[in-house]
Image (tube, rainbow, N blue to C red):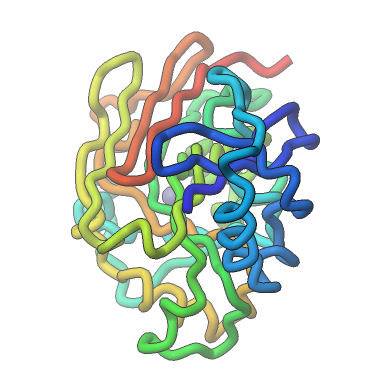
Length: 284
Ligand code: ZN
């Protein structure tokens, strides 16, 4: 299944993209896509609802705003430097264990919402990433059991303010958490939709120029390793997002670096997980 949420910000309704590409309103199902939904066998119940009701459900007009494909989760856990080439362009050694950091959950927005360049930002940057959505509470899970805790996958742009991240002391969270820094979607693809999450092309363009173009095959730590690893330090709740790191080609890696400014257009995609597009606007 492909799950979407649509409508005005903070008033999103649940929807589905059917196999024929038509998007339907799943409000009749009666539950938003949140922790309670995912933790309570929501995907099975939704599939049964769709089987019986999809044909008669209202169609969502093309051009309707999409929200983040899941309701605000308990946390967004990010993995740093998880592509060997990206570590190299950042001038850093590939990590021996996954580097973890958080992104504020208030940074979450719809896939095609504007990117707001934060107040006083000079160094806003992009990062196309495969996001993993947790489907079942995970605490001290083994790698062998890890995938049974995954609900599915989504496209994510891990926007990053490099000065806030790297030059302002402390750790990375300051540069990762600004409003609009986590466009998620267009849709959550359930696990069965993606045959191999470790063999997906992913790309990002700025103003039509390809800046990132790689494959998840380049990840240092794979999805089951990450889920198992993170669950040794914290409980992953249904709906939690793990953003698995970005390939080379971020603005910081160019000489001289390239950073985003109001008016820029950022487009990105992952094979099987759709595309998104953000317009950069100034903070006001
Ligand atoms: Zn990232």
